Length: 301
Image 1 (cartoon, helix red, strand yellow):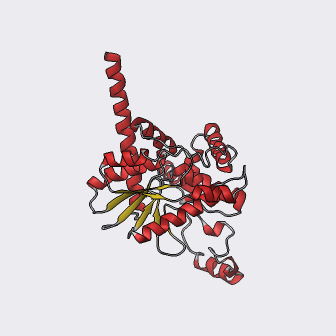
Image 2 (cartoon, rainbow, N blue to C red):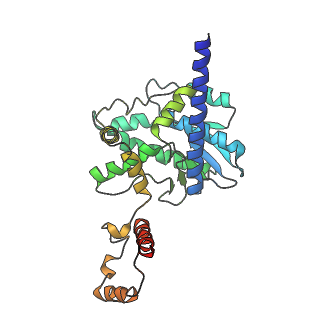
Image 3 (cartoon, rainbow, N blue to C red):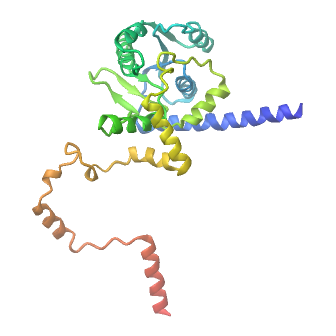
């Protein structure tokens, strides 16, 4: 009996720490990118996966103590996949006693018709899903669309775009849609996937697998995920540094001429810069300053 109680206490302590960490990271992301404003009506997109369940739970938690007022509407897109458990999400959301809506659109048949067997369905599926979600948001006066992408999703997308698209871009924590009508936010942007997975496990969310694309084992995203895990195992801390680099960009040290005016850097500009800094005090590192101080003390003795 005492062993059972100690296990329960341990799980409760672990859960409380995990929840606080997730709340802190979500709150920091919301603050850093001004994701939520007073009076917002937020559409929380729920897929039935661990990420979206966690996002909804943390946002509902933060809503209770937030200094501003905002609405939350949980929305699921039922894409009519064979065997999809249609009652799981409505039952779960009803138990939370929050506003929710199930959009029913047969995108599954469209994807199967357009994409040959064995080919990746994610691209077309996501485009169809995005169009439906954007339209529903406009029809229902939604001001923010919340998606459950976490830190690893952002980094994986960065490498996918570099390796296969020849672009250095990822999933921004906040995005204005191309038509300028919808604002997308990713509150889990600072959250580790491992934390999200553990939280979902402890909360025992009714997870619904994606049978449409989950069976495609050779997706490039899975390869990227494995690559990042391998790097982290071999060089602990590498994932954190990669993530930090996304928000610490130096355009003048890359090659995008639209971001930095390389063509405007002329010889005249160099001469002018050298003249302006000719009599500037040299920069001295803290270690150099300490060495100089010791040298002065020695001379004084």
